[in-house]
Length: 128
Image (cartoon, rainbow, N blue to C red; front, side):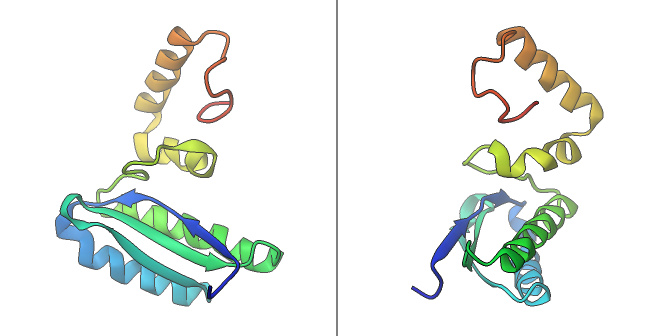
């Protein structure tokens, strides 16, 4: 193993944006002095930027968080989505409203509240 911790992420961009997105991830890795490998399901634009790091190194983990935010932003700038197959979850929760916009985010919150009024299903995973 190159590093003790592997963080596998999941974003999707239009296939026409794949090359640019891979270059963006390489630039983000360099900017934050991190090792990021990218693989995926290129036929549908799904990329898995995989960050090789050490979760015990708090300074490095801060750089990982910044790099992930940059990867999400690069994805959205290319007309992509913050998740292709792994769902939103806690890691992507802060970026969901940015992707959906206020109206769609509020609608999603309303649907969740209507179907799960007591917030029993995955509490806190998408909405607080």
